[in-house]
Image 1 (cartoon, rainbow, N blue to C red):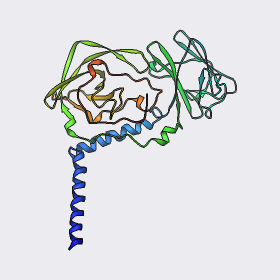
Image 2 (image 1 turned 180 degrees about the vertical axis):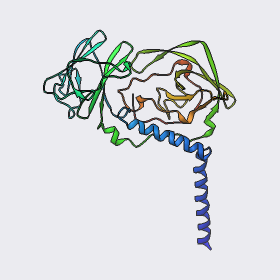
Image 3 (image 1 turned 60 degrees about the vertical axis):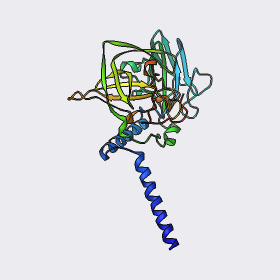
Image 4 (image 1 turned 45 degrees about the vertical axis):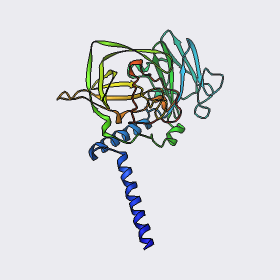
Length: 301
């Protein structure tokens, strides 16, 4: 009799435990699958060659010669076991960067043996990619600053990465919203973690209601979607203190417009100190605890 009673209690406990786990996530099977699939693609993209997990260096160029290699005497010091002592130099004159590889160093540019050449930066849409062994690097331009972004396709973080913790999926955070257009577009002065200011034009804001209160933040145009950098009351606690990223689909054919915070994700700076992330503008700080989307990861900036 006693054993039967214990068995019943244990069964009830396990049943209730299962209930509590189910309560953690809210939404139809189709919706839960959609968000999980979105997140899986997101994490897989982080691991790709152009993802954020393989960054191992960011060097801002000075006018004139900028030598690079593994030797500490270089201006740009590459990882010790990935290159050779003195690999070449990047010469910056005004905003033009010229590569001069050293002799007998097997550097390639866009898959071909490197020669002295002027390099296209990432603002061109197709930067010239230099490579040596598992290293790849290219020129980036951020405002008036010109630098080198260095990747290691065998970076330790790639092997260590086990995914990103998230808040439980909750369809209550997929909220029907209103698009508030700006006519003319609003000028945004967006600060970055490297101290620069980026100027963007906002086509409008998203306005939504949560728990009876109105909230609004500015959007940037991203083609078929809008993009936003925002912060909320979880920022600096459960989520990254430098803000959160979110893409929002533009209004559908019926004019309906939804903001889905379950698709909120971390800026690149969460994963690496070699990124140049934008920060939220003052109008994009929300006095709301948004317990949806990705949580913080590691130390970042």
